[in-house]
Length: 361
Ligand SMILES: Cc1cc2nc3c(=O)[nH]c(=O)nc-3n(C[C@H](O)[C@H](O)[C@H](O)COP(=O)(O)O)c2cc1C
Image (cartoon, rainbow, N blue to C red):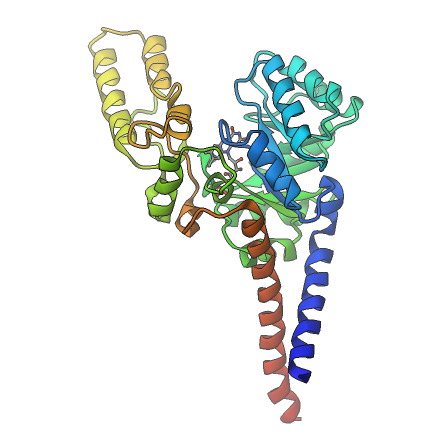
């Protein structure tokens, strides 16, 4: 009986500790737990975003290539499904960026995530002057500091373990390079996170919260095609690789996804274009465009149409931890419980060490 009471108390204390560790993130996001659902083009729409926010996390709509009217519709539809806060992720090179920000502000979106490049001071001001909070990605310490000077109110540091477009540096290294030196704004970590104990380790080092994509893409509420989710369940971490560039004259932005017939054909396609360029049959500009166009529409093909052989099955290395299709609430609850378990286990380990030391006098 006494043991059971002790266990309950210990769990309550660990929960309180976790809450303290990510309180700044929760306060910033207006959520119960400091877990963002990273925006995923085609995947992060009204159903998944509202499910994440309703489960206590913070959902983010992926605007991607949407036009302003379409974004307005998605925001309204999301609001109809949740009364909790959620964000919108905008790609900074979108030709209608200013209008998209205006749509977010008109619809009283509380947080705007500026992705896909370094946002200008003018865009950050537009977001903040309109009453929303501005978040951006920091791929390196110097850029993170510059973004804070420009008025960014929170940073996401995303390691190369993540799904989708990635930088070259792992979260393990980015965290060491950035976390100890940024204290003015909350910093959220992303990339390869599949368990609560891993999230806890970053919170203890100063992160305010975590952003996850891959786990949520395979959730019950995700509208991704059944084939897409099943490919996630089958895959292990080593199947989620970044796209390779064949020739340094023709840059390829690395995208992490599951290897399939499409990724293999991409290599052959680059070789073919390169061959024709070397023979003078195609100009450098056209060759670059041909390489870039290979993946046009490929994410939609995989996510919506379920063609996981030819489409782009973007996924992070955490894909190996996706074992079943689970509701978002289950995913978030187990992340929290894993963090709580880790705190309890750590306490047990420390006291087991202390007792013999004390006994030894
Ligand atoms: C299918 C897929 C699509 C994604 N699309 C976008 C996107 O449109 N914009 C963006 O900023 N990040 C995108 N991401 C990255 C996620 O927002 C998130 O940061 C990342 O998935 C976190 O790493 P994880 O996959 O290891 O959890 C995408 C990720 C996946 C898996």
